[in-house]
Length: 400
Image (cartoon, rainbow, N blue to C red):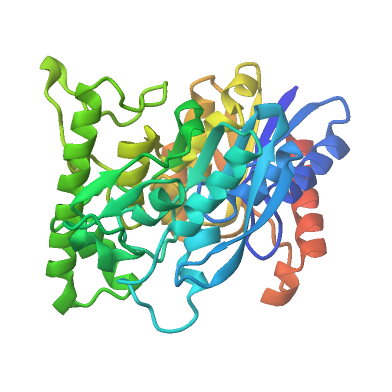
Protein backbone atom coordinates (compact mmCIF):
# COMPACT_ATOMS: atom_id res chain seq x y z
CA UNK A 1 0.00 0.00 0.00
CA UNK A 2 1.34 3.42 -0.97
CA UNK A 3 0.17 6.55 0.85
CA UNK A 4 1.09 10.08 -0.19
CA UNK A 5 0.76 12.81 2.45
CA UNK A 6 0.45 16.49 1.55
CA UNK A 7 -1.02 18.48 4.45
CA UNK A 8 -1.04 22.26 4.77
CA UNK A 9 0.30 23.80 7.95
CA UNK A 10 -1.92 24.09 11.03
CA UNK A 11 -1.05 27.74 11.62
CA UNK A 12 0.32 28.35 15.09
CA UNK A 13 0.40 24.64 15.82
CA UNK A 14 2.15 22.39 13.26
CA UNK A 15 4.16 23.10 10.16
CA UNK A 16 3.26 21.22 7.01
CA UNK A 17 6.08 18.71 7.56
CA UNK A 18 5.29 18.29 11.26
CA UNK A 19 1.69 17.46 10.40
CA UNK A 20 2.75 15.16 7.56
CA UNK A 21 5.31 13.26 9.62
CA UNK A 22 2.84 12.87 12.48
CA UNK A 23 0.34 11.35 10.05
CA UNK A 24 3.07 9.07 8.70
CA UNK A 25 3.86 7.77 12.19
CA UNK A 26 0.17 6.91 12.69
CA UNK A 27 0.01 5.03 9.41
CA UNK A 28 3.12 3.00 10.19
CA UNK A 29 1.75 2.00 13.61
CA UNK A 30 -1.25 0.46 11.86
CA UNK A 31 0.45 -0.67 8.63
CA UNK A 32 4.21 -1.14 9.20
CA UNK A 33 4.77 -2.30 5.61
CA UNK A 34 3.16 0.76 4.02
CA UNK A 35 5.16 2.93 1.63
CA UNK A 36 4.55 6.46 2.91
CA UNK A 37 5.71 9.60 1.10
CA UNK A 38 5.47 13.01 2.84
CA UNK A 39 5.48 16.21 0.77
CA UNK A 40 5.58 19.82 2.05
CA UNK A 41 2.50 21.85 1.16
CA UNK A 42 1.50 25.51 1.04
CA UNK A 43 -0.71 27.75 -1.07
CA UNK A 44 1.90 30.17 -2.41
CA UNK A 45 1.15 32.76 0.28
CA UNK A 46 2.59 33.40 3.71
CA UNK A 47 4.56 30.44 5.01
CA UNK A 48 5.33 28.94 1.60
CA UNK A 49 9.05 29.64 1.80
CA UNK A 50 9.31 28.05 5.25
CA UNK A 51 7.25 25.01 4.18
CA UNK A 52 9.28 24.23 1.07
CA UNK A 53 12.57 24.99 2.75
CA UNK A 54 11.74 22.51 5.53
CA UNK A 55 10.45 19.91 3.09
CA UNK A 56 13.39 20.10 0.69
CA UNK A 57 16.17 20.84 3.18
CA UNK A 58 16.64 24.28 1.68
CA UNK A 59 19.30 26.85 2.46
CA UNK A 60 18.02 29.93 4.26
CA UNK A 61 19.35 33.34 3.24
CA UNK A 62 18.79 36.43 5.40
CA UNK A 63 19.41 39.85 3.92
CA UNK A 64 18.81 43.41 5.09
CA UNK A 65 16.71 45.24 2.52
CA UNK A 66 14.71 48.43 2.12
CA UNK A 67 11.35 47.92 3.80
CA UNK A 68 8.03 49.21 2.46
CA UNK A 69 8.46 52.57 4.19
CA UNK A 70 12.19 52.73 3.27
CA UNK A 71 13.17 51.50 6.71
CA UNK A 72 15.67 48.61 6.93
CA UNK A 73 14.09 45.17 7.42
CA UNK A 74 15.52 41.66 7.47
CA UNK A 75 14.07 39.59 4.63
CA UNK A 76 14.40 35.86 4.11
CA UNK A 77 14.43 33.66 1.04
CA UNK A 78 15.47 30.04 0.51
CA UNK A 79 17.39 28.04 -2.06
CA UNK A 80 16.10 24.53 -2.74
CA UNK A 81 19.25 22.62 -3.81
CA UNK A 82 17.57 19.60 -5.38
CA UNK A 83 15.28 21.85 -7.40
CA UNK A 84 17.90 24.46 -8.33
CA UNK A 85 15.28 27.03 -7.40
CA UNK A 86 14.99 30.06 -5.15
CA UNK A 87 11.70 30.62 -3.37
CA UNK A 88 10.76 33.94 -1.81
CA UNK A 89 7.75 35.93 -0.64
CA UNK A 90 7.40 39.60 -1.46
CA UNK A 91 5.79 40.11 1.95
CA UNK A 92 9.16 39.41 3.56
CA UNK A 93 10.43 42.70 2.12
CA UNK A 94 7.30 44.74 1.35
CA UNK A 95 4.47 43.14 3.32
CA UNK A 96 1.65 45.01 4.99
CA UNK A 97 2.57 43.46 8.34
CA UNK A 98 5.85 45.37 8.19
CA UNK A 99 3.92 48.63 8.67
CA UNK A 100 2.69 48.64 12.26
CA UNK A 101 1.45 52.22 12.20
CA UNK A 102 -0.36 54.44 9.74
CA UNK A 103 -0.16 53.28 6.13
CA UNK A 104 1.07 55.56 3.36
CA UNK A 105 0.30 54.08 -0.08
CA UNK A 106 2.07 56.94 -1.87
CA UNK A 107 5.36 56.17 -0.16
CA UNK A 108 5.25 52.36 0.16
CA UNK A 109 7.76 50.69 -2.15
CA UNK A 110 8.67 47.25 -3.51
CA UNK A 111 12.36 48.19 -3.70
CA UNK A 112 13.27 45.54 -1.12
CA UNK A 113 11.76 42.81 -3.30
CA UNK A 114 14.18 43.76 -6.06
CA UNK A 115 17.04 43.75 -3.57
CA UNK A 116 16.17 40.15 -2.59
CA UNK A 117 16.15 39.09 -6.24
CA UNK A 118 19.40 40.94 -6.93
CA UNK A 119 21.09 39.26 -3.96
CA UNK A 120 20.01 35.81 -5.20
CA UNK A 121 21.20 36.58 -8.73
CA UNK A 122 24.59 37.70 -7.42
CA UNK A 123 24.84 34.38 -5.56
CA UNK A 124 24.40 32.62 -8.92
CA UNK A 125 20.74 31.59 -8.73
CA UNK A 126 18.58 31.83 -11.85
CA UNK A 127 15.25 30.05 -11.21
CA UNK A 128 12.71 31.80 -8.98
CA UNK A 129 9.34 31.02 -7.41
CA UNK A 130 7.83 34.17 -5.90
CA UNK A 131 4.71 34.58 -3.77
CA UNK A 132 3.25 38.07 -4.02
CA UNK A 133 0.43 38.02 -1.46
CA UNK A 134 0.16 40.38 1.50
CA UNK A 135 1.68 43.48 -0.05
CA UNK A 136 1.71 46.97 1.47
CA UNK A 137 2.39 48.64 -1.88
CA UNK A 138 0.65 50.26 -4.82
CA UNK A 139 3.70 51.28 -6.86
CA UNK A 140 3.16 49.10 -9.93
CA UNK A 141 6.31 47.15 -9.08
CA UNK A 142 8.40 50.18 -9.98
CA UNK A 143 10.47 49.92 -6.81
CA UNK A 144 11.43 46.31 -7.54
CA UNK A 145 12.48 47.29 -11.05
CA UNK A 146 14.53 50.23 -9.74
CA UNK A 147 16.46 47.86 -7.46
CA UNK A 148 17.19 45.67 -10.49
CA UNK A 149 18.68 48.59 -12.41
CA UNK A 150 15.78 50.21 -14.26
CA UNK A 151 15.76 54.01 -14.03
CA UNK A 152 12.47 55.87 -14.35
CA UNK A 153 12.82 59.46 -15.53
CA UNK A 154 10.52 62.47 -15.60
CA UNK A 155 9.97 64.72 -18.62
CA UNK A 156 13.20 66.58 -17.82
CA UNK A 157 15.23 63.33 -17.64
CA UNK A 158 15.54 63.47 -13.85
CA UNK A 159 15.54 60.11 -12.01
CA UNK A 160 12.41 59.54 -9.96
CA UNK A 161 12.24 58.43 -6.36
CA UNK A 162 10.37 55.55 -4.78
CA UNK A 163 6.71 54.83 -4.16
CA UNK A 164 3.43 55.43 -5.95
CA UNK A 165 3.98 59.18 -5.60
CA UNK A 166 6.41 58.89 -8.54
CA UNK A 167 4.01 57.10 -10.91
CA UNK A 168 2.43 60.24 -12.35
CA UNK A 169 5.86 61.65 -13.30
CA UNK A 170 7.16 58.68 -15.32
CA UNK A 171 8.00 59.86 -18.84
CA UNK A 172 10.89 57.62 -19.87
CA UNK A 173 12.57 54.35 -18.90
CA UNK A 174 16.35 53.84 -19.01
CA UNK A 175 17.58 50.23 -18.90
CA UNK A 176 21.32 50.90 -19.30
CA UNK A 177 22.02 49.80 -15.70
CA UNK A 178 19.78 46.72 -15.63
CA UNK A 179 21.43 43.56 -14.33
CA UNK A 180 22.48 41.66 -17.47
CA UNK A 181 21.90 38.32 -15.67
CA UNK A 182 18.15 39.00 -15.65
CA UNK A 183 18.02 37.62 -19.19
CA UNK A 184 19.15 34.26 -17.81
CA UNK A 185 16.49 34.14 -15.09
CA UNK A 186 13.05 32.57 -15.06
CA UNK A 187 10.29 33.64 -12.69
CA UNK A 188 7.14 31.75 -11.72
CA UNK A 189 4.84 33.92 -9.62
CA UNK A 190 2.12 32.58 -7.33
CA UNK A 191 -0.82 34.83 -8.18
CA UNK A 192 -4.38 34.04 -7.09
CA UNK A 193 -6.13 37.20 -8.29
CA UNK A 194 -7.34 37.93 -11.81
CA UNK A 195 -7.52 41.71 -11.59
CA UNK A 196 -5.98 43.92 -14.28
CA UNK A 197 -3.61 46.74 -13.40
CA UNK A 198 -5.97 49.71 -13.74
CA UNK A 199 -9.64 50.66 -13.68
CA UNK A 200 -12.53 49.83 -11.34
CA UNK A 201 -11.32 46.22 -10.98
CA UNK A 202 -7.65 47.16 -10.86
CA UNK A 203 -5.02 47.32 -8.14
CA UNK A 204 -5.83 50.77 -6.78
CA UNK A 205 -9.61 50.49 -6.57
CA UNK A 206 -9.89 46.89 -5.35
CA UNK A 207 -6.83 46.39 -3.14
CA UNK A 208 -5.77 49.98 -2.45
CA UNK A 209 -8.12 50.69 0.48
CA UNK A 210 -6.52 48.02 2.68
CA UNK A 211 -3.17 49.73 2.05
CA UNK A 212 -4.41 53.19 2.97
CA UNK A 213 -5.74 54.47 -0.37
CA UNK A 214 -8.61 56.84 0.44
CA UNK A 215 -11.62 57.50 -1.75
CA UNK A 216 -10.32 61.01 -2.46
CA UNK A 217 -6.96 59.79 -3.78
CA UNK A 218 -7.89 56.64 -5.69
CA UNK A 219 -8.95 58.28 -8.99
CA UNK A 220 -5.73 60.29 -9.24
CA UNK A 221 -3.62 57.30 -8.21
CA UNK A 222 -5.30 55.02 -10.74
CA UNK A 223 -4.77 57.65 -13.44
CA UNK A 224 -1.09 57.84 -12.47
CA UNK A 225 -0.86 54.06 -12.71
CA UNK A 226 -2.37 54.22 -16.21
CA UNK A 227 0.23 56.80 -17.24
CA UNK A 228 3.06 54.65 -15.88
CA UNK A 229 1.66 51.62 -17.70
CA UNK A 230 1.41 53.54 -20.97
CA UNK A 231 5.06 54.61 -20.79
CA UNK A 232 6.03 51.05 -19.92
CA UNK A 233 4.00 49.61 -22.81
CA UNK A 234 5.64 52.02 -25.28
CA UNK A 235 9.09 51.13 -23.94
CA UNK A 236 8.37 47.39 -24.11
CA UNK A 237 6.86 47.61 -27.59
CA UNK A 238 10.00 49.30 -28.90
CA UNK A 239 12.09 46.57 -27.29
CA UNK A 240 9.95 43.94 -29.01
CA UNK A 241 10.29 45.65 -32.38
CA UNK A 242 14.06 45.77 -31.97
CA UNK A 243 14.16 42.08 -31.02
CA UNK A 244 15.49 42.81 -27.55
CA UNK A 245 12.49 41.83 -25.45
CA UNK A 246 12.98 39.58 -22.46
CA UNK A 247 11.36 36.33 -23.52
CA UNK A 248 8.49 34.99 -21.35
CA UNK A 249 9.29 31.89 -19.29
CA UNK A 250 8.47 28.54 -20.82
CA UNK A 251 5.48 26.53 -19.66
CA UNK A 252 2.56 28.76 -20.63
CA UNK A 253 1.06 31.15 -18.10
CA UNK A 254 -0.28 34.56 -18.99
CA UNK A 255 0.89 35.79 -22.41
CA UNK A 256 0.69 39.15 -24.16
CA UNK A 257 -0.20 37.77 -27.59
CA UNK A 258 -3.39 36.57 -29.20
CA UNK A 259 -4.23 34.76 -32.41
CA UNK A 260 -3.40 36.88 -35.41
CA UNK A 261 -0.43 38.54 -33.74
CA UNK A 262 -2.40 41.27 -31.95
CA UNK A 263 -0.39 42.79 -29.10
CA UNK A 264 -2.54 42.95 -25.96
CA UNK A 265 -1.50 45.59 -23.39
CA UNK A 266 0.13 43.93 -20.41
CA UNK A 267 -1.89 46.15 -18.06
CA UNK A 268 -5.16 44.57 -19.21
CA UNK A 269 -4.04 40.99 -18.56
CA UNK A 270 -5.40 39.08 -15.54
CA UNK A 271 -3.17 39.17 -12.49
CA UNK A 272 -1.28 42.34 -13.39
CA UNK A 273 -3.13 44.17 -10.60
CA UNK A 274 -1.86 41.74 -7.97
CA UNK A 275 0.23 43.17 -5.11
CA UNK A 276 -0.39 46.76 -6.14
CA UNK A 277 0.77 46.13 -9.69
CA UNK A 278 3.77 43.97 -8.86
CA UNK A 279 2.19 41.31 -11.09
CA UNK A 280 2.44 43.80 -13.97
CA UNK A 281 6.16 44.42 -13.37
CA UNK A 282 6.93 40.70 -13.16
CA UNK A 283 4.97 39.85 -16.28
CA UNK A 284 5.93 42.78 -18.48
CA UNK A 285 9.55 43.40 -17.52
CA UNK A 286 10.79 40.05 -16.20
CA UNK A 287 8.92 37.69 -18.53
CA UNK A 288 7.34 35.95 -15.54
CA UNK A 289 4.62 33.34 -15.61
CA UNK A 290 1.67 34.13 -13.31
CA UNK A 291 0.26 30.89 -11.91
CA UNK A 292 -2.42 30.16 -9.29
CA UNK A 293 -0.60 29.49 -6.03
CA UNK A 294 -1.81 25.95 -5.42
CA UNK A 295 -0.99 24.89 -8.99
CA UNK A 296 2.49 26.36 -8.72
CA UNK A 297 3.23 24.64 -5.40
CA UNK A 298 1.81 21.26 -6.43
CA UNK A 299 4.04 21.42 -9.49
CA UNK A 300 7.05 22.53 -7.44
CA UNK A 301 6.76 19.60 -5.02
CA UNK A 302 6.16 17.22 -7.95
CA UNK A 303 3.14 15.74 -6.26
CA UNK A 304 1.67 14.31 -9.45
CA UNK A 305 4.67 12.03 -9.95
CA UNK A 306 3.99 10.37 -6.60
CA UNK A 307 0.24 10.05 -7.15
CA UNK A 308 0.46 7.86 -10.22
CA UNK A 309 0.84 4.64 -8.20
CA UNK A 310 -0.64 5.77 -4.87
CA UNK A 311 -3.57 4.08 -3.13
CA UNK A 312 -4.40 6.76 -0.56
CA UNK A 313 -3.72 10.48 -0.31
CA UNK A 314 -3.83 12.37 2.98
CA UNK A 315 -4.33 16.11 3.06
CA UNK A 316 -5.82 18.70 5.41
CA UNK A 317 -5.41 22.02 7.17
CA UNK A 318 -6.14 23.62 10.52
CA UNK A 319 -9.83 24.21 9.83
CA UNK A 320 -11.91 22.46 7.19
CA UNK A 321 -14.96 24.50 6.17
CA UNK A 322 -16.91 25.88 3.24
CA UNK A 323 -13.96 28.03 2.18
CA UNK A 324 -11.86 24.88 1.83
CA UNK A 325 -14.33 23.52 -0.71
CA UNK A 326 -13.99 26.69 -2.79
CA UNK A 327 -10.47 25.78 -3.90
CA UNK A 328 -8.09 25.93 -0.97
CA UNK A 329 -5.06 23.66 -0.69
CA UNK A 330 -6.73 20.36 0.38
CA UNK A 331 -9.18 20.51 -2.53
CA UNK A 332 -6.33 21.24 -4.93
CA UNK A 333 -4.61 18.09 -3.70
CA UNK A 334 -7.85 16.09 -3.94
CA UNK A 335 -8.58 17.11 -7.52
CA UNK A 336 -5.11 16.07 -8.62
CA UNK A 337 -5.35 12.77 -6.70
CA UNK A 338 -8.68 11.92 -8.33
CA UNK A 339 -6.96 12.07 -11.70
CA UNK A 340 -5.25 8.81 -10.66
CA UNK A 341 -8.16 7.23 -8.82
CA UNK A 342 -6.73 7.70 -5.32
CA UNK A 343 -8.87 7.67 -2.19
CA UNK A 344 -8.50 11.04 -0.46
CA UNK A 345 -8.70 11.53 3.31
CA UNK A 346 -8.45 14.89 5.04
CA UNK A 347 -7.53 15.64 8.65
CA UNK A 348 -8.13 18.96 10.38
CA UNK A 349 -7.96 20.57 13.78
CA UNK A 350 -11.61 21.52 13.44
CA UNK A 351 -14.39 20.95 10.92
CA UNK A 352 -17.60 22.90 10.36
CA UNK A 353 -20.97 21.71 9.02
CA UNK A 354 -20.11 23.38 5.69
CA UNK A 355 -17.09 21.10 5.37
CA UNK A 356 -19.46 18.51 3.87
CA UNK A 357 -19.06 20.43 0.63
CA UNK A 358 -15.50 19.07 0.51
CA UNK A 359 -16.97 15.62 -0.20
CA UNK A 360 -18.28 17.02 -3.47
CA UNK A 361 -14.81 18.31 -4.36
CA UNK A 362 -12.89 15.03 -4.21
CA UNK A 363 -12.29 14.50 -0.48
CA UNK A 364 -13.79 11.09 0.27
CA UNK A 365 -13.84 11.51 4.04
CA UNK A 366 -12.53 13.98 6.61
CA UNK A 367 -11.75 13.71 10.31
CA UNK A 368 -11.13 16.21 13.12
CA UNK A 369 -8.09 15.30 15.18
CA UNK A 370 -9.06 16.89 18.51
CA UNK A 371 -9.89 13.87 20.66
CA UNK A 372 -11.67 15.31 23.67
CA UNK A 373 -12.85 18.38 25.52
CA UNK A 374 -9.93 20.78 25.54
CA UNK A 375 -8.98 24.44 25.63
CA UNK A 376 -7.83 26.21 22.48
CA UNK A 377 -4.39 26.61 24.00
CA UNK A 378 -4.13 22.87 24.62
CA UNK A 379 -5.39 22.02 21.14
CA UNK A 380 -2.85 24.40 19.57
CA UNK A 381 0.09 23.06 21.56
CA UNK A 382 2.45 21.48 19.03
CA UNK A 383 3.14 18.32 21.06
CA UNK A 384 -0.58 17.74 21.61
CA UNK A 385 -1.40 18.43 17.96
CA UNK A 386 1.28 16.02 16.72
CA UNK A 387 0.04 13.30 19.08
CA UNK A 388 -3.60 13.91 18.10
CA UNK A 389 -2.74 13.71 14.41
CA UNK A 390 -0.77 10.50 14.79
CA UNK A 391 -3.39 8.79 16.98
CA UNK A 392 -6.33 9.75 14.75
CA UNK A 393 -4.60 8.65 11.54
CA UNK A 394 -3.56 5.38 13.19
CA UNK A 395 -7.15 4.46 14.02
CA UNK A 396 -8.38 5.34 10.52
CA UNK A 397 -5.72 3.13 8.95
CA UNK A 398 -6.43 0.27 11.32
CA UNK A 399 -9.92 0.27 9.83
CA UNK A 400 -8.60 0.53 6.27
